[in-house]
Image (cartoon, rainbow, N blue to C red; front, side, top):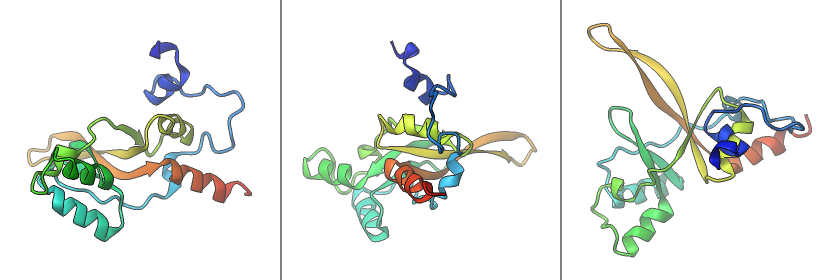
Length: 165
């Protein structure tokens, strides 16, 4: 069952500390990865334009975020090309037709240990940060901002660069 699987419990925020012999980096916060700002696509961007933007900017993937800030999913260069070439999408279709809508989110304050558990099953995690915003009448609401996209390579690079320190 998922509920007795420690890795599932960590990934979903029900358990914090399960490894007895944790690596030195286990409790370091995600924010220490110094991720670069993500490239974000709006949902109305066409598949053709998404391919052009990703190739031009040198990205493999980008979050698709509505103007409201709602994270709709992730678009990847390979999935977009595969979908168009297979006839499942047209170049003119909005990028929302080819997004992955199953994705994991992780906060800047979460540990690299939690990130490691997420990356055992997922190719990436979207790094988010909660921000309080106020509207014209003074009422406040929390909005999730996409802070970056993190992959296993990002974690591996951090660990290998800092392993001798």
